[in-house]
Image (cartoon, rainbow, N blue to C red; front, side, top):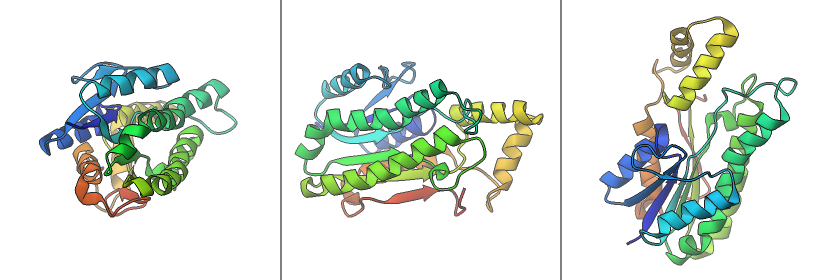
Length: 239
């Protein structure tokens, strides 16, 4: 029995992906810092924590697929002039170092399956910048560069690697950024979300389940012909 390992699986997109994959019959091991929603606890910002997370997943079987979703958002981000070095490093440790370390630790399992799958959760912020999102946008853009290389390195082994780029999704992480934006601009949180919704022709933001379903497909054996792709989940809009 093979396993799908999902990082950041206790809330938002990670939790939605876990539910979609379980509904499809997959054995899912979720990792989080909180241990909520039946997830295993590990600190993915360190090499030791990543090794622990992979070992926890391997108790249930070899790892066939990775969903690299763990991330810190833009609530503590800022412009180049405002952002502290400590906040920059923390964002990179979670958003960029952790996916690299997790893939490296699980690599032998992934290529041994002959149909391994890696899905990175990036963001539309990786391609369309926004004021004050220096570290977040840089880290999510870095994922795309890494994804393209991993897709090529994994191809001889039947391994695919893709990225999903969600727009605004109503999650705990994006809620924290809404709170920070409201405090910075003097608006209410409801006004911040109304502005985000108005930015889409559909006049709504993306639901976590909509991203989860795309992730579930990219983890499936039916997605074998799709690799090295950036798949935007943003209701047809650019942001």
